[in-house]
Image 1: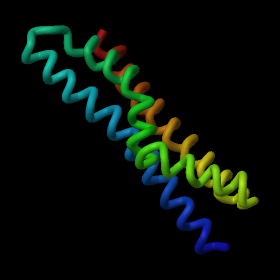
Image 2: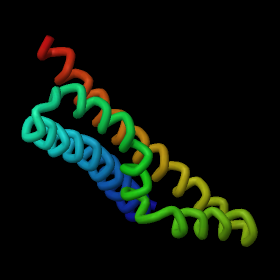
Image 3: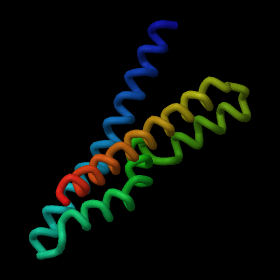
Image 4: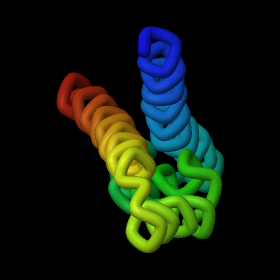
Length: 112
């Protein structure tokens, strides 16, 4: 049980940080692009952060088909553990993406 919990925790941490990094990284590089094109960088960063959250979750989960396959396995083969694990992975990825968005929003707020 401890080994399974440890693997689940490791996956949760990885999912959180991957989705966080996708949002923050894309926003920062989008801000650099806005500076190059003489657009307001903080506005571009916030726009990118808000629009890329769902893609960060998809990247974190490794594509949607593997998640759907695990959910299908849980529903039709009675393995409810896989449904719970996928739900935890999705929620962790969403939490990471939203945290990244709020960090970018905080950067914008602190610059005012």
